[in-house]
Length: 271
Image (tube, rainbow, N blue to C red; front, side):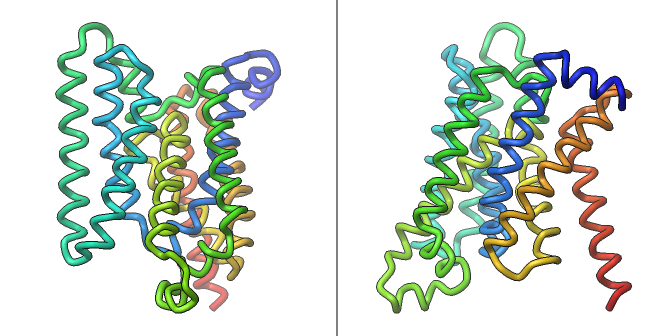
């Protein structure tokens, strides 16, 4: 632990990692409750895995994989949302198709890209220690967009998350706010890529919110508590993984899973 504390104070890459983890925790804390309450886990999974296509295309043309992920995330979110609204009965099939096709396109472009592709693989499994200054700038911008949008449309999102029919009765444009919510989920996934990677992103997006739901019944309370839990899990995962040189992203997810299991067991004992 002392080595980790010393690294935080002396090593720039560790400071970037810590800042990136805190920014990711804030984003997933704000958006995660919507994913949980609205049951958007499957949709979020489809968006996350479709990103590999955009990342592969961007990497092939010599552009930033995160830029490709950002574009692919928004496009995938809008497509999946539109399909869900228009063809609800075919939602699972379309999501599965986008999930598979997105990853397949990414693999094809990666395979045709000359040179070393290990950096791109870090986006799949996450490597929080590789966060750069430019990554942090992007994370700050995305967090500002996410939090600003949630603050601006909090009441509308609240109604849509719990009762779409009531929202329609009140004259809200449910289609617009639902698609906007999915875009926020997509942006949050992009924020989390560097921390835990595409493979584990859904766990970090939902587990802190799931733990928070055990202690508060309000959406606002879930956001605050989930953000704090995400920060604690990220910091703990970094500290635990630093000494034995374990993958930080996987360590964070294991801690989140164990924490959720512990909370469920304690709640059951109290009942």
